[in-house]
Image 1 (cartoon, rainbow, N blue to C red):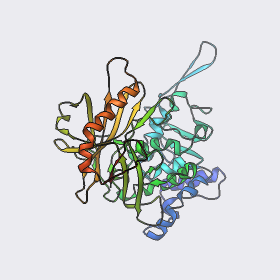
Image 2 (spheres, rainbow, N blue to C red; image 1 turned 180 degrees about the vertical axis):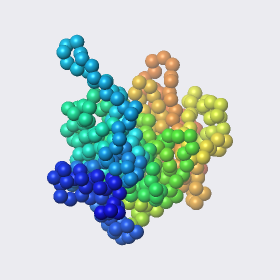
Image 3 (cartoon, one colour; image 1 turned 135 degrees about the vertical axis):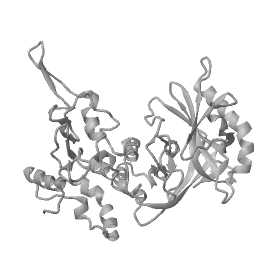
Image 4 (cartoon, rainbow, N blue to C red; image 1 turned 45 degrees about the horizontal axis):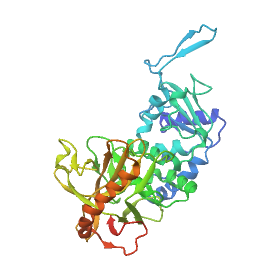
Length: 418
């Protein structure tokens, strides 16, 4: 017992006071330096956390030496005053949950996210006090009945109203990629439990961090930060697991008020697994995509402004090193209609391995700010006609093969992305 860290000792005390007989601690319950035991137990993390009574989170501790019962932050104050109606008002930091939990030292560790997402309830110990999160209520010592409504941000609260993990996937990935991993090869492994739980809900095919259904929209992820870079050569370039940095999607996946029209569809998708677990590490993968056409753009003008191409303004977003001055194949994927129009697609460069094979180097968007009251169908047809006129000639020399009877209108050309 003397060799246990203060955080572990505090966790034992908390478990005893809660009347719990058993306590799971990853680093103690998984044999260290045993690759076979690690593979076995990491595949069971979903059932471990989901089957627990409560998750104890030392959110405010930078390491195990600090423990759970932390000294209060002197900058955090709660001021009470009498109200005119005889009640009382409490004044405190407006974003206590966000600052104490979402941006806590614990949240910076990639492995910790699935503990929070999968556990039925979590008790957080922070310098601002204790916070409680479960499927029915989120609260804290200062607000024991309920957190203020402005704290209930859908981007970081998942338990309320029993929201499905699969419907929050993109927000979960954004939080996850914001955190750090000691071993970069654990990029997919550290969320195996979450992915497994999501598949139980959606019954979809899992492909290196993406899902087969509606994959065209998922392919248009971007990276926050000034210096993104390719991280894992094993993950396919179309997967966010191949890059470092916080990943996000700017398109809206709630489609009640969004109309999508497609220029391309994923015909086939596969990954090469580095082991038996479909949620674990991969050693490659490929997408076969049918498309209306592609076109070439030189990105040299991105520093001084967007490129003016047939009245379409192209904006580039790179995955790694800035591709300034390079020539890219642009693959339009879909046209999004909401209050304004957007075209989304991928920036590709040939692998030079075989004809029609590419790797992703970024994504692009084309905002359509058309004058007057032009309807969506006009703008969509205008861009499709552009692809027919200019994209076909390029696609003829860039495709892997053509389709005589395409499943989707005009999508005769087929390319591969690895």
